[in-house]
Image 1 (cartoon, rainbow, N blue to C red):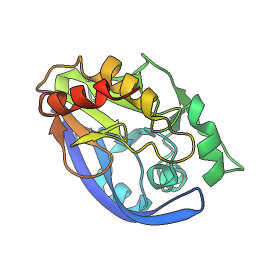
Image 2: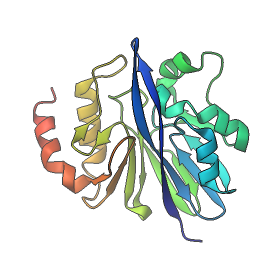
Image 3: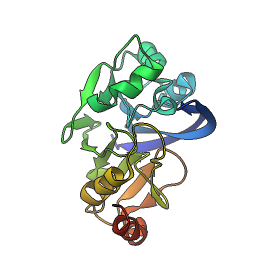
Image 4: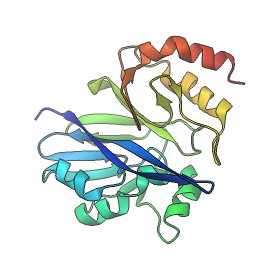
Length: 209
């Protein structure tokens, strides 16, 4: 069966450092008619399960552990039996939301996930969060960047656990070398491409340190 990317937008709140903000999140579902993975189970487990349409959920992948990207993950896992996967370096953030439980498995740099015959490679891209990752799927000409890279520049680095020079290094070393036609599927907002972002990112890199 043909693999496809489904897109769902869910709404809720993001809380960190004593503040709370209303946010809309992108939820990405990669798979075919029989199986799928979910990238960033945000806010509404029931809506995500409905979007799966009865497909077997192989994994719930967290690009990082800010609460708006993981707040539906345990409920979706309980409903589907799928494991929740997170990079180890984001456990301190995870525990701010779920102090009594841990994810089911770890994402490591260079590891791969396969769904519907398509491989996604984990790229560790710290900066927005210590354990932030992107998922690169060359067969789909797509990279799922969470909050590492958006249309218009890098993710925010003004709060706890974030670091601007680190996110700039991650984007330079892990993302800018991807083919320019690669579609950047972000954690919030519109998609873009590596090629469209490259000129402005070069300016960010120049002042990144």
